[in-house]
Image 1: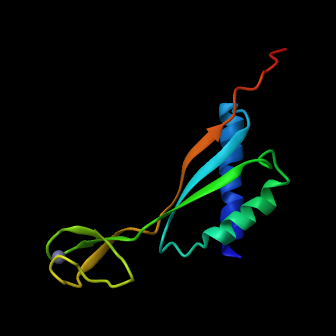
Image 2: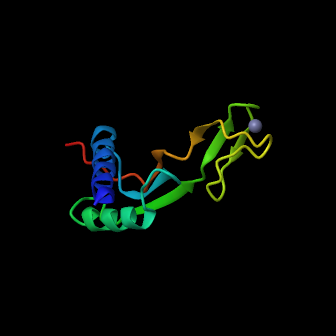
Length: 121
Ligand SMILES: [Zn+2]
């Protein structure tokens, strides 16, 4: 399952961040997924919830935002949101379109709990 390996890499990225920045408990991870990235948010969340149990992220929530598909018309240069997968420009009806948005997968934020009391020796 494609989503499982994505969930795994998200967890690894966040675990790295925790280590290098000495962060406290991560309460939530915000994620942006493009509508045509081919990732199923439900499957990704399911995979994340399964893998996190073996890590310090076992209480972390994954908050997924799906980014709509945006296109830009090469003919008239206007940008628009693509709905119902009709790939034509609503402004001039041209079908010469460059995809501008909709394929991303980004970690947008990490919500960190109150600072841990770090014992410094
Ligand atoms: Zn146009």
